[in-house]
Length: 157
Image 1: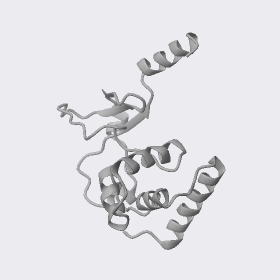
Image 2 (image 1 turned 120 degrees about the vertical axis):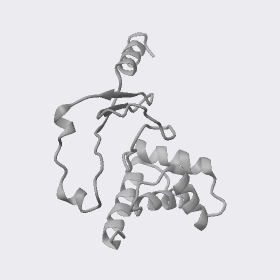
Image 3 (image 1 turned 45 degrees about the vertical axis):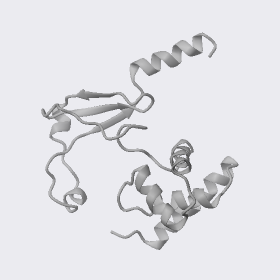
């Protein structure tokens, strides 16, 4: 489904406002990288963004795309899906379960919930296609990362 011009314009206006409010430079590279994500009908990974932007800007580096995407996340303009800063992860647990993903270290832990196993999906999701499975991903900070941060604070770091 193609995004409407009005919706893309709203996203680009927000991008401009957030950059100005944060004192960040509105470079051509940043604009193109954000626009690529903002107009995508799928959730592209960094490599897909790089390839698409490179068609319009042949001199852009992969490093610039990666750094810009993480910067856009830091300033709240985009979100990540799946384990942050990791490649595709594989799971041999074929029993029905869900995932807790640590947004700091990338740890993924399985958890079980009968309630979530039977969650009713909205009709808008079923209109997208035939649903085979549904799994909940909860993102947060794991106990180890919380404790490390607390210990660093206590040590003055």
